[in-house]
Length: 216
Image 1 (tube, helix red, strand yellow):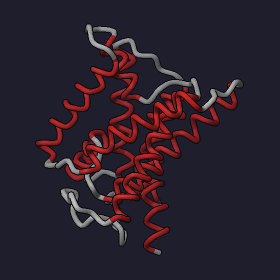
Image 2: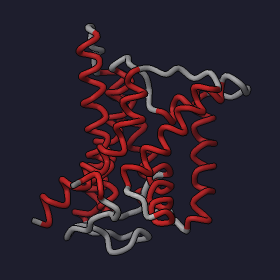
Image 3: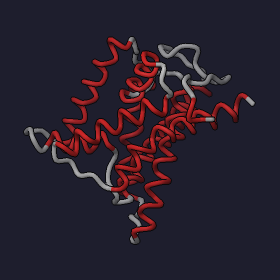
């Protein structure tokens, strides 16, 4: 059952180590594919008009209380999360760097070129699809093993320390972040809640599907 997954699966295109700055072409391409899906999902969630991801809600909430833009706050939050990697013994890699670049590009593409749905049902359906796409992308790029993004590195590190299922750890992180963001004044919508509660199982499903596709 995908909800009980505790370890990141390995495939024939997984990098043997995250600090690999000369990966196989297939590994690099799958990494970029995973990050593209991840960014596409985040962008589609915004386009759905049902609310942003929990980390964006947190950045918005903090920005309402200090004299910095949401983008600047997002940068500082990422730095803060990377600092939390130190006691968890997580190390950045190519994927950590490309995470910010590719995801940011895909979000801009979605916001600028994907039309927003008009009906409430269509908006909710798009939000659900966005969460699933984000989870699939997360599964692909985590299995590439070229270094997770700040949030996923924190998830992996906490999972290794607690030995809890990945789905449970990710859900705990997202729910905690969105709660803090909402308390600080960030805007929470149905899409935000879908992401907070759904991204953990969605990432676990992504890991399960990739594992079954390449290791069956």
